[in-house]
Length: 309
Image (cartoon, rainbow, N blue to C red; front, side, top):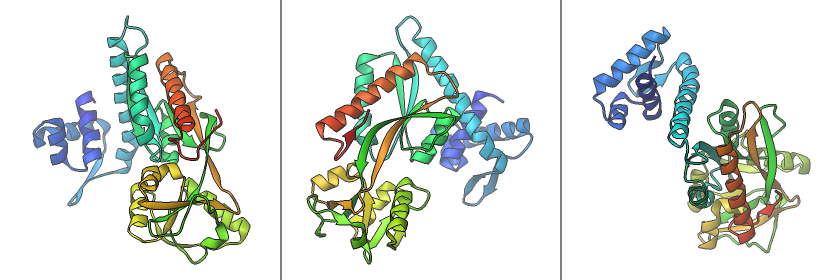
């Protein structure tokens, strides 16, 4: 097993196709196929099912993916740290950010890290809270912003921001920020919501159970972009923190109102691993991330956010 084989394997996983993987790796297709074949011979079992629609991971392939990503990530970290020896704080730091806040935080974060710590290279990964938790526990990310998480022996969480959930509708709706909408008033309204176990869906189902309310969920999607598009297309209202669609609210493409009776909030926390040491580069980058999150709340860019850190 060597690095070329692992890179070929992961590229085929990401593209789902040997031909596309060859284009990404700037190799000919037979060379990529050979790397996969050699890796399978070394492992002693097939890693892909060759189907008409592409390359599909076998159970063994699914197991190898996580290990392969972590192996290459550790080598990338070592390379960056070695290149930075004698140049102050250096290293590769991978941060996990949520879809609702990644656009707002990524640019100022990258700029602030580059200015304060030019030896640090930042890698930003986007994922939903459950995915980020798994990446954090496995070492695929060094730190992450998560929704409030249950106690975990592998993750230390520090509350940073509390934000309310709003009812979000198309621009022709009568929703207004100064007119909260009671949960019971959503009965009979078509809704576009994430599917379980997404955090917002869990919060909504709990509130509905307590209030003895049944909602009409017409479409389920765990993609924020699809959730937004469906509301823009008139397929129903949705429930989101206002930061997730702040630009649409500002431009009046969507309308929103606070969800009330009960008020429902969620907490954004900083997650750090407890199962491995935190390097100086990671700690410095996390400090910058906290500063940028605080700045976003104080400036009002994090719409309706309340700083807890």
